[in-house]
Amino acid sequence: MKKRSPACRSHWLLIIALLGCTAVWAEESQQKFKITSTLKQLYGAERAAKFSELLDPNAEISWQVYLPDYAGDEPPGLLVYVSPTRSGAMDGRWAKVLDKHNLVYVGANRSGNKVPVTRRMVLATSSIMAVNRRIEINEDRIFVSGFSGGGRLASFLSNQYPTVFSGAIFICGVDFWNEDVISDMERVLNNRYVFVSGARDFNLSETRIVYNKYLKAGAKNSLLEIENGMSHELPNANTLDAALTFLAGE
Image 1 (spheres, rainbow, N blue to C red):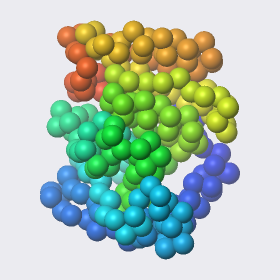
Image 2: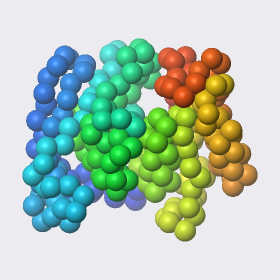
Image 3: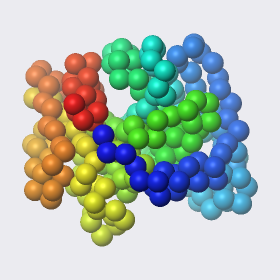
Image 4: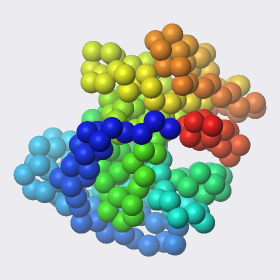
């Protein structure tokens, strides 16, 4: 996988330093737990005030986290998941796949489709810093994914922050990018994308259309995965495994 340039890496580490937080870790198990924090803890009082129209700086934010059971020594990557529902919990079928690929999972709670887009963006991007406070993350393997309306937001995040997210998985929901608001089109075109849909998903036709638009625009590292028997739902472990294998450049 293409490495980030020193400039991109330094920029991202600076963001992490600026947004360093004091987070509370509600231990549920060694692998599954919840992080809680506030915008004031994440950003500091002055910076948090800038988001006051989206979130009360003192309001509690929480994310569901899964740590992979991996035998190697290298730091894990991170899969940021955007849920269309109030819960950011992981699908239990995905655990062994994330173990295999050495990926931490994080999903924001109370970040469903009824929540304003800008607020969901803050919750998703802030999850990276919150997790990074606990363990070292391989910054070259930070991916974003989402289901249905969450997939559409994941497509927006991957295009807006292509130096942060090197790959994305859009599940049963995706939008094509707005070139006018993209700061680094070269990175957008060089990153890797997987479009996942079910053979019986009502969004299958739209997913095909956007996938072909990506290819036509020059995003050649794109893959369409259609799961047989699947409707508008999360994919099984085998489909996720194929998607993550593609993101890894294999």
